[in-house]
Image (cartoon, rainbow, N blue to C red):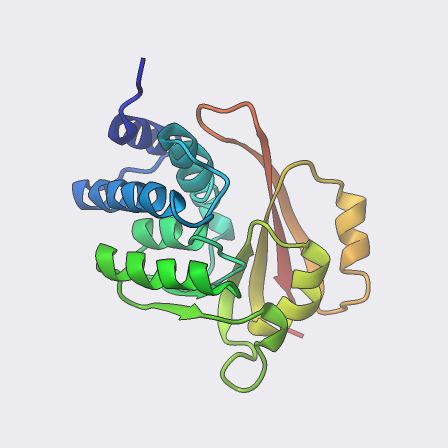
Length: 219
């Protein structure tokens, strides 16, 4: 039996403790239809079907909102956003956030500009860049929170941590996590400290998901 995507989204969000407004649900449904339509022409994401996108592209992106103590400030940057996740789903639910989406592939950047305009989102910037090119006064310590889902943590820590202000945070979406590995990753960065490592349950899925938080010290 076909699952209604609107019902699936609302139910999944409620299981995360989130209450979406009707306009937010409409935004997600528009995002869903455009993602499927564009995916037929260009490869934006490996998720092809409605339910898969609802669960693994939208709800998975919203998982950090389960632990609001890790969500910090309003200046956020999503490194390697691809077709916009996790940054755009988070932005839909948190319209107060100033979101920067970083993506090096032009076809995905084109889609991002299209969907941002279609959804009527404000205070969203798309940077057609690689993370290692984000340097200078515009970028240094410009963000309260860096998030990333698909990139190598070692590269993001090396290239991305200068983007985060002192006292800010880096948040990684992971599957399985070994804390010793993460402590080794930040061993050479005296201003970084491993914060919370929290397994979370993705609605309607048996997939494992762990959120890893790294704090940048004030001194």
